[in-house]
Image 1: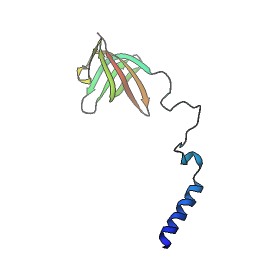
Image 2: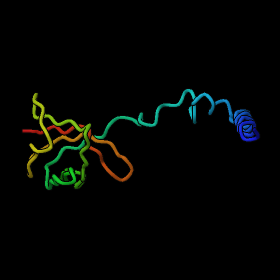
Image 3: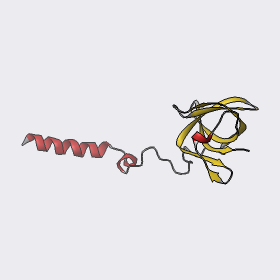
Image 4: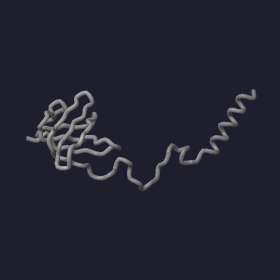
Length: 116
């Protein structure tokens, strides 16, 4: 008999201690602030591919600013002119335009356009 009453008491006590924003599922939300993924315009680099790694799905592109390693995700889109393409259509020495974003220490390719 004491177990169910203690559980109900603990539940009621916990409900009174939880702030209203947590009870509504509104954890950490603050009105008027942009979402964390809204960080500005994407970055773009034009260069030639110097290295491809199909096992880890990344490639290195040499441009004016130096060599950059780009990581490919499921969301990365590849284009060759008006046609869809894929990571496996890339070749060393091929010119590309890469639209990317920084994710910590990694540059994630969002769009890769194969240039003629």
